[in-house]
Image (cartoon, rainbow, N blue to C red; front, side, top):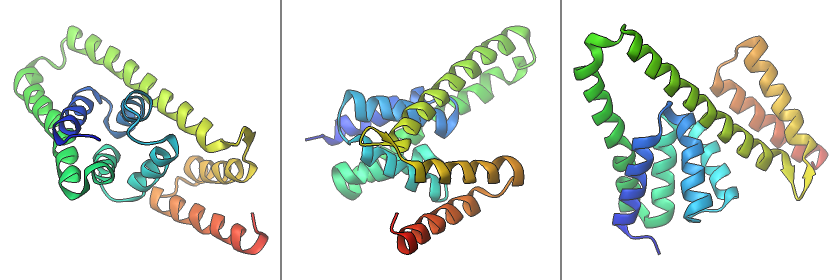
Length: 183
């Protein structure tokens, strides 16, 4: 059983190391909560990320709220949410106060180039792990999910559609295919 203190410390840690915003945090959350602690299953994590992405607000905060609730109820939800919010707030406040005068300096630019590269790697890690889990069911390629992914990607890349519209259309299309064709 997870204690409130362990929940707080874990999400505080996630909050401190989730550079790159929500998507960078998804990879970190996956590694910490699924792979290392085993608090939730991969399937639960995927569902939570889907819901967190579909609701208003930052994905990492939404996911922390949901996971905290799953593990320890309403108080767990509040604790996980606050713990994941506190570090970025403190870091951003510190950056604004201390580094603003130096942001155009070549050293600051070099540091942020390195941070950006690491964030990109975290996003890629999350993408690869989640893609594999979503696209392969029971060891075989889920063609329906691949098709829905390709349609959604086309709407994103070509039509530049709103994420809300893409998510809603994908959900509706999947439901219709399930109801009409039984797939």
